[in-house]
Image 1 (cartoon, rainbow, N blue to C red):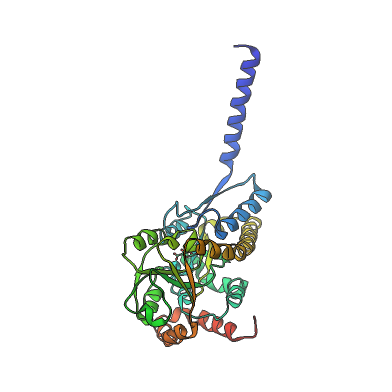
Image 2: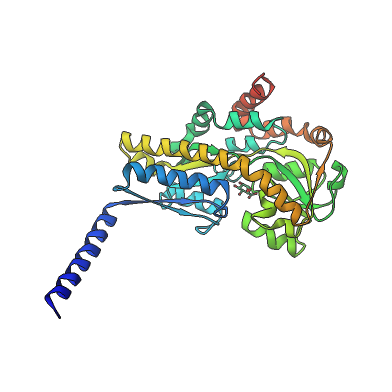
Amino acid sequence: MSIKKILGTALAVASILGFAASAEAKTTVRISHTQIETHPDHIGFVAFKNFVESKAGDKYDVRIFPNSSLGANEKVLELVKMNSVQFLSVSTANIESFNKKYAVFSVPFLFTSESKFEKFITDPEVLAELGSDAEKDGFRPLGAFTAGTRNFYSKTPIKTVDDLKGKKFRVQAGPTNVKMMEAFGAAATPMSFGEVYSALQQGVIDGAENNELALTDQKHGEVCKYFSYDGHQMCPDLIVASEKFLSKLSDEDRKLFEDAAKEAQKAEFEAWHKRIAEAKEQAKKMGVTFIDVDANAFREKVLPLHQQLLNENPAMKAMYDKASAFNASNNK
Ligand code: GCU
């Protein structure tokens, strides 16, 4: 081997070793979510990654795991508690079984306008109040992503609230969702997000409820051709952090991650409003018909459930009162 070749090989080995050493010195930060890579939640987390790595790329290697590749959210929340995964975007419905306070967002028709909902979930005071049990829970919400409005979609058109009668709908996990469907006169089948497409296809369920992106990104619009705008729920996807991870950070690094969550939130909201209009057009091309229903009739049907849910779950009372007061206020 020529001297030049030996030197070249030595340099290559040194650079590989050097790289390995510096990579080892970095802390890997794992982020998990359930959506595809064009979804606003993913775009939000790319902003998070860029923010952290632009400020402290020598210390942190941020890796995003989309498409539930680390598991369904209910399972990953356990990993977050253990600090095997550091960040997760998770619907409040999936947090209900860990802390009953989060069930508040599953109360149907809690908010009457999307802009009020958006203001409420991004209010730092609301997030702090949700996170007040963080040490016990093992996770802490640092920011919120909007997930728009949840509506019914099915294989047959839902034009009135009576059209729900006797049908089987997939809902997110949690007893509140099951009670909501019962109040609507339908049956609830809770299952994780990733299982819905085949359940629809195989006829295990007649329909589901979600925002427009489920039709396109999850391809539910291939099976369900009717989407009815009743707007029964607005549930945020919270950016939750492992409390174990946060508690080990210096004040400076903790602030870095808190700021990164805010960056993610901002990027997700921007992407959301752009993407939702596109998704609607995309779904129409898939053959989906969008139906404007008398949402008030849907609301009236389940309003008596509010008091029942509050009696059964006093843990959500304080947040329910706060959200109701905000919803009734002049805040647009
Ligand atoms: C939305 C939401 C997800 C949630 C999903 C579901 O897509 O953004 O967090 O998991 O609905 O219905 O399961």
